[in-house]
Image (cartoon, rainbow, N blue to C red; front, top):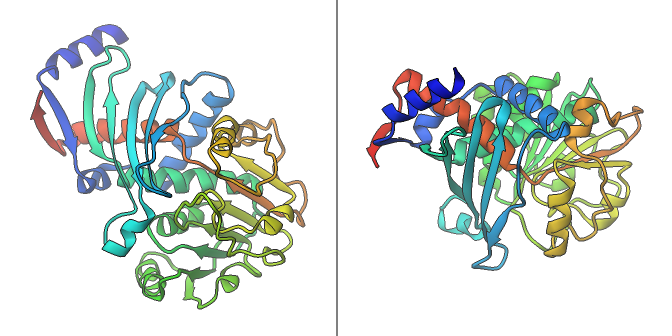
Length: 335
């Protein structure tokens, strides 16, 4: 029955391709709790070895800039596709997005492309959702204070994800651009009923915070702004910047470090990233299925160091496409 339905659907769509703009994706995209739940199911599949994800293939046209091809397949939900994404930190100075890309979603049964969509919304939501899922196992359940270093797209999406998992009351936001941190406060204060304060010094967004998210630009050589002695006893760090914010001595103070995929992180070590990061042998999938206990005491300092996985992209993108077709959102293009 699955093959017959797939065949009928794809014959009907064989002459056209759905295009979804960033606005289209945001309009039909799943809520943050739904994204977290979808990723939890996916990481269980990853732990069972029931997914396919080769290492990222990339090119590096400029220093600290890259373009990556990220394919993945999650058979249980019929999710297959590839994200082509760029990261250009220097774009910010020109008023351009630092992260940009497209996602192609394919029918897993026939291989035919179903849709092409802007990748910005999916990238922001799935990254933050994976961080919140990790923090569920690594942070104290009573965490009430969040520090955010880097007040761009990822800083905003991470606040949206952490309020789902934790009883947040206070947020301290820092950015090298004071205007960015002020805008973060204005926008996020309208969205969430928490006390959000822009701070002038990075240590104010770290010291005494229960959860600290570093979401600045990815750089091969860390600037090490987050110093030893800043991360409080019992705090949980979340790095989505390839630990660019973290000084090597601060990393050595962490009791438990996890990642979303050890093999891919080790590959990036070979390329010169993650200098100063101690060896990691535990993945998010191990935490999700209970193979690793995660936090074991209130005093532990923990850190989730995530790269962002294609598996996350295709799972969320598949939900977006299904909802877009059902709601008649997007633009159909001839093949």
